[in-house]
Amino acid sequence: MSQPRRTSRRRAWTAVTLPALLCVLAACSADPATGGGTDAAKPARDSSPTPTGPPGTLFDDFDYTGADDPSLAAHGWEIRTGGGGPGIKDTWSADGAAFPSDPAAEGGKVLRLRSSTDGTRSGTTQVEVQTTSRNFFTGTYAARVHLSDKPTSGRDGDHVVQTFFPISSSDSSENYSELDFEYLPNGGWGSVGPQLDNVSWYKADPPDRVHNTVKRRLGGWHTLMITAMDGKVTYSLDGKKLFTSSGKYVPREQMDIHFSNWLIDLPFTGDPRSWDMKVDWVYYKADEAVSQAAVQKTVDGFHSTGTAYINTVPKP
Picture 1 (cartoon, helix red, strand yellow):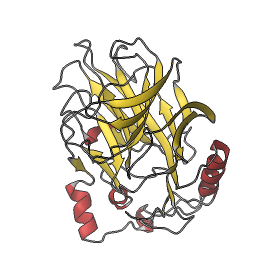
Picture 2 (cartoon, rainbow, N blue to C red):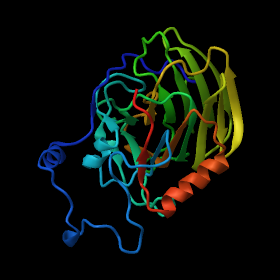
Picture 3 (cartoon, one colour):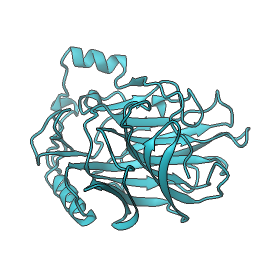
Picture 4 (cartoon, helix red, strand yellow):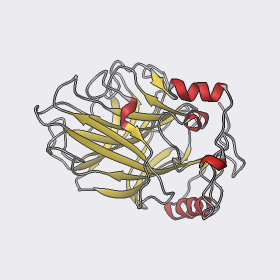
């Protein structure tokens, strides 16, 4: 089971690089004549910051050009570059975030989170991407995620943690809330793995949480879902319920949504290796319990109309 995760959690992030920021300030835009237009063979993709759509809905299929794409920040995403934990402290880097094409992606592109290490702290980078709008509370959270059982390059054996979770913006909040999907292909904290942990938190410090562990190898694409409604939280994998928490182990305040790929420790040195986690799309529906089949039908509808992004979730 996951240990306390947010020691010395300092919020320092990057959303756009200087060239992209200058582009925003200059109000520059792509010119179809120079290759900046949409593919004529596909529906035009709606990437405006606040498109219309179903109320109380967030959907993003991560159709971005890179970490410095101004639309990434406009759509409410940040890439962590600051200090703190979990894992190897102060090794967070925007270098690990990219948006490559992927033939297995339903939307054509993915958010790729790549953590790398040579077994030393100075040679380690971890990656985390989160929403800037801390307005997610009860309802349905879902993401199509590719989990890795083996490193993309280099020797196997790292204690890597691949995660999807909504969480409070402050560990010290009186109403602290956190709901975790954590995949550990090689285990960690004394566990052998592979394992998928689901953890519902009441307090971060001292740790107060309940959890469930599934001992199963899960490399490949999966739909991860968290439904927080009617005084209980249900975690599902590909439509199958895994764990339910209730009582005090439910959300008590609005949260932000995170994806991260990080290392618990550095078990060996001398061999550079990297681990990839990929996210095809993310979906949230406020104040409704939505089935996996209904989520997929809605996402398919967005893709069929070329809709890459929607956010109609009320602001806090």
